Each structure stands twice: as C-alpha cells, then as structure tokens.
Amino acid sequence: MNAPDPLSAPPTDIPRSAPEVTVRHRVEWHDTDASGHQHHSAILRWVESAEAELLRSYGLEWLFGRTPRVRHEVSYRARLWFGETVSTRLRVERLGRTSLGYAFDVHGKEGTAAEGKLIVAHAAPESPTATPWPQAVRDALAADGKESA
Image (cartoon, rainbow, N blue to C red; front, side):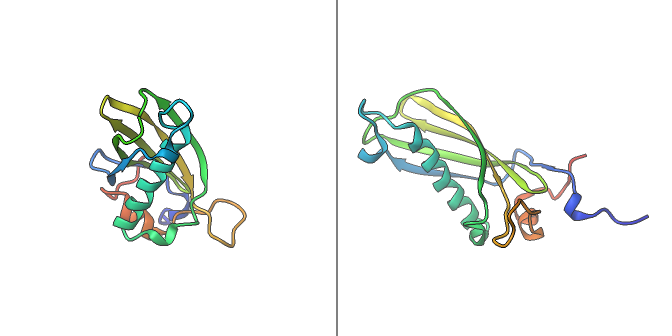
C-alpha cells in the first residue's frame, strides 16, 4: 500500500488550542468615516495586521505576498469611536490543501464590535493558481499534527 500523497491530504481541523494572536489598536482618525465611528474597511485592516503578527510569531513571514484573499465575511455588532482602544483576536480555524481559514473578533469598550472569517490561499509567486501549502506551514499551524478525515 502506498503512503498518502501529502499534496492531496484532507483539510486539518485545527483544535481549540490553535495558533492565535490578539493585537491591540487605537481607532485613529483615518479609521473613521463621516459619522465618527470606524469605517467598515478598518476592521479588515486590523485583521490583516493581526495575521501579519501571527505569521511572524510562527516564523512564517516569508508567506507575505503569497496569500491572496479568497473570501471574507464580517458581522458588525457595535460601533468603535475615534480614540477608542480595541483588540483584534485572530485564530487559525482550518488548514486545507491550498487554503487557510481564520476566524476573528474585534472588541471595544462595548464588547464585540465585529466578528467574521477570512479565507486565504497559498499561491507560489511563479504560479497563476493556488498551490499546496509547504510542509513547514502545515507543521507550524496544525497544532496537533492530525489530519481530519
């Protein structure tokens, strides 16, 4: 019997002790719109900042520029105002063959202000399409090392 091909491995369901990071930000003037609270795009900038911090903390900063966004979904729950301190928590939720799913939440003084999901793909610079995650990424982000069925 042949060993399974790691490039066709099923997605890895990441356990609750999954890689995660929390980054604190202050709502700056450029983060707000004419109404004085955060512009919807500020949430995604904060999530991307948290993603960069998470990748750095796992020695994966070489992935910068290799993870195009495939999909994002945000549910806005409360407004965040200029000068308010917020925290953005990002955690790895699922690691697929070529995609990576993050879950995130953004908290301000009123509690959860936004929550959602971000899906990125791995794309080697020379490839026009998504490519499988290198084993180093799988090893770093799959906390328990087990593949799901």
